[in-house]
Image (tube, rainbow, N blue to C red; front, side, top):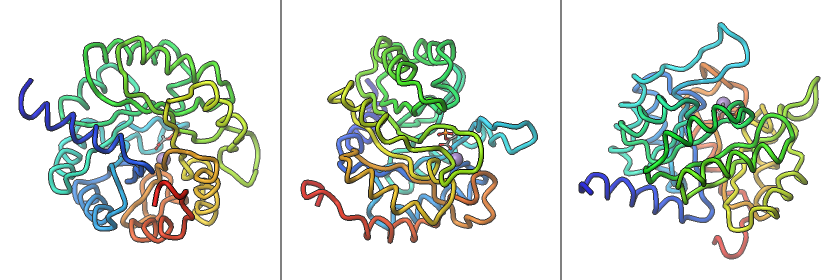
Length: 266
Ligand code: PEP
Ligand code: MN
């Protein structure tokens, strides 16, 4: 194995073992400057273990910003180099897996709109055969635990041994307090059925708005989640996607300071 490959695995490995595992970054990579400045400001908080950004964005309606695509991967590579933090990207196809790995992405995640589709998950799993990379799997948009478990099984069968779960809430129709209902009992049941598999919480996509992020994050920690993935942006109001739920890296740092952690995390 090349020195580069070994270094890549150890960066991801180190982050993977951190508790709480804190992943943060913009919903979408927009420009090189935005990705790098976000990453630098997150690194400065000293509390973030990995940087996230969406490169390919699965949007509900056509016409919304669908991500910068592959040209954003070198920006992530650069952010990784500058901060020394591993980077995480969402993948939805085999080609995206190949491209992400080619540009040194350390952690992959499967989005909620992909977890619902066994063909897509299988395609990703096939592309992961023979690869050593941690994979996080978001819950499906609908409250179906079997689909979530099935996705984890497909990835595990491909030989991936670092699999984590992301609870991002479940889609519901109409105006409710949450963008995606947390249905905490389902996350708890998922943990019960997959002992030993880490689960982090995604307050951003549960809340869909800034003012309740803190409460949801605290609830997740109280429920013994292994960490958080939270969207941050250098100019949240002008973000190209999910503007209402994003906060600045500094506000996120303060949010983390206010969380009452479990004793073993301090
Ligand atoms: C995201 O993390 O930006 C995203 C698209 O989330 P989800 O798959 O949970 O909707
Ligand atoms: Mn988002």
